[in-house]
Length: 285
Image (cartoon, rainbow, N blue to C red):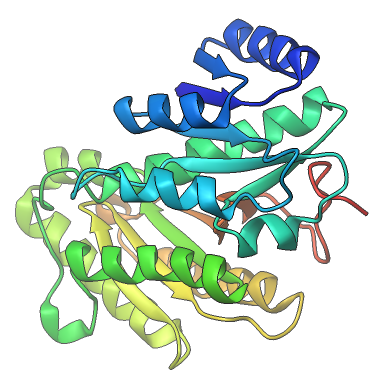
């Protein structure tokens, strides 16, 4: 990833640059917010770290960066650097996450993983249209329509502190079915899975076909801590029952995962049995 660090602290810049460069990232930095924002405007960065000190409000910096983006350019993943802020403070001011000082290498790795994950999903929406699509009568949104809701849910996290999650369902062996059983079989598999997903989802959940082999389910505004885990377990159980009924030559190998926005943090995935609050070392206690 291309990364910009805007920070007056030379030690912080040195540590972060060293760690990120070792991980294979391209890093640029500046100790002046004015110069740093100008460089961020001129370059297309995937992730930007900003320490607003001596100011306490990072919002003006974030807004300048947003306003400079090209019309079709995705927003970079912005991380607020601070010694004592809370994650909610960073999110409400337009940042995707918070990284506390002094630097914790594990927390930095977590933030970079979240940035890469969210950026990858945003990039998915920019890829060519799906080769095959399920029957529109099944109530599944197309890629572009779901993209708008996906981006809107990130924006609502910034504006209102809303917690939204997206459950991703991927047919891991879709290409094999298409190659070995043909287009009709692959399309039938898409239709059957789309129908099953539409039946499992709650009325408030929004389903989208985000890639030829993948669906996204927007789990809007969960009210209690384990609600997302409950939804993940429900989908995993019901889809498992569904795939068990399919013939061997058309049996779907399904992968499930959930991310939380606007962080991009992985909440749970196949093989994960956790229930309860996740730890995040980038967040203050």
